[in-house]
Amino acid sequence: RRHMKKAIKIYKERRDFMCKSLKEKLGDIIDFKVPEGGLAIWAQFNKKVQVSDVSAKLLKNQVALSPGKLHDITSGRKLNSTRMGFGWMNLNEAEKAIHIMEKVIRKEI
Image: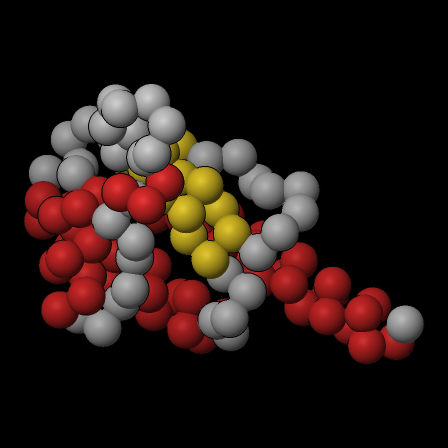
């Protein structure tokens, strides 16, 4: 129980940090809801930003972001969205990843 309580606290802190940082730095480009559970954020990107293009450029900068195609299997429409996991990163890693995302995406539009 003690371990679960500690883990939940850590993951909630990571979730809150990611959500706050994404809203502050990319809120005009990414739309998402703060997840009530789980270890990922489902993010819908503005049409000006193509997730697949951003994903490829981020990978060159050592940031892995799913190009979203794995999540676009049911409708046939291009959702331009992806799932961003936060459970495995500490706060410093998350901050660095979001900073790189912001730089790459702002160059795109």
